[in-house]
Image 1 (cartoon, one colour):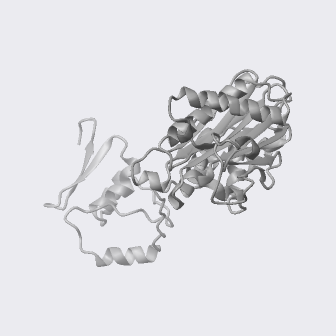
Image 2: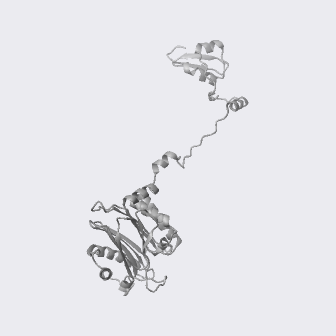
Image 3: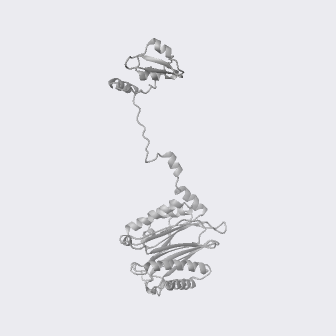
Length: 368
């Protein structure tokens, strides 16, 4: 599943344009069994906001996929209908869970089976403010406009401090486990949101990959950015059982564009001019010394059909008219003779008979 990168129509010149690149893949556990990817991702924007959300359905639940889809749907509905900017955090938590419950009930599935974690990011295209909300084990990173080391924006959070346990949006104490962060995008390069299958992004191991992905997304390098997130997602998908989803949000801040364009923008034209095509390598053989070529010619038997040897580059061609060559006698082989007098045969042709050993000068105008 892909969310193709796209450009936001931003109101106000001081608000950076927003681009999104994303990928979601079924983990090894589901892939080998040909089962569905139980993660879901969504992107929505209108004239005033841009929303991205990622959700991870619980594999042990029969409604895991439906739960993750409903969680993403609820995230968009909440962001569209609620003033998240002026609402305090406690009120915001209650309002968000209320919307989630409404969407869950609309699925007509047992409520207790709708187990999913989720994380959403809402960005104002008018003021440049952002709000991030997470429930459970999804995570988010944020990068400053200079593409320095990524910082953790949201990470798995539970009060029981047990790494093997998490909380779902349908849990009775979900509001206690919900985390909310706020900020502004004017000095940011972008964000990376991801499910538990890509939790290694919280470590320093993939710092350069994260910076490159956000940088390429910020400069709207569509195919290059999509390739980067595809490779990164596939790396985690191959190395673990969990489904993997990654969303990159890039912001066109001037410093970010300058740095990312220098470090990451593909330079296909320059590479084409300076490097030979790999499928057709250019091979230049070393030139054979003239004296070696002469010795080789003497040792070789005369072929049935003489081939024209290369002209010696070091010796100037002597200029003779065709008549002078005929008067002085011809000692060269026919091919050599033809090569030497060819500059003078503008409307004539010299032929040679191997049977008689005689040369004949023919005028192409009809006389010979």
